[in-house]
Image (tube, rainbow, N blue to C red):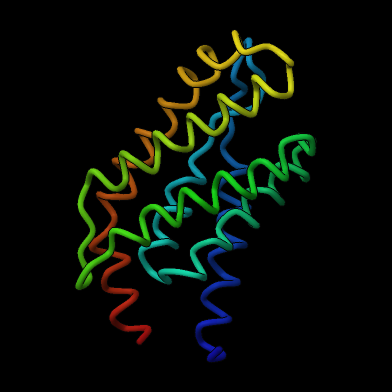
Length: 159
């Protein structure tokens, strides 16, 4: 791995931690918190591709631990890593379709719905969790797609 690639990967992970931790808004009923970290999870996927995109989950999981939501950390590692992988799989010739971002955001909401159902031992928890998280997934998808030209420039200048 090139030093530049290692440095950019590290900066993305640190930025994901920061954007996940601040600003946050608690999600009533299901627990957890609304954040904008997915914007950088999705942007890292575009900028670094596979397999490095999977490391986006590290930053988000670290934020969970630091914010006191450690019970979610392993789930977050997997959910966010796969969210990034979904976007990375759709990148073709420096372009990625908008529906890839929507699919990734929907996966994230479904992943947390399953996680909350598992942690609460109640399948009924899936729906409120999914509904709370789909808002975050779709908002972050729109923002991430909107800033895509910025990350396209970063990727071009980086290589």
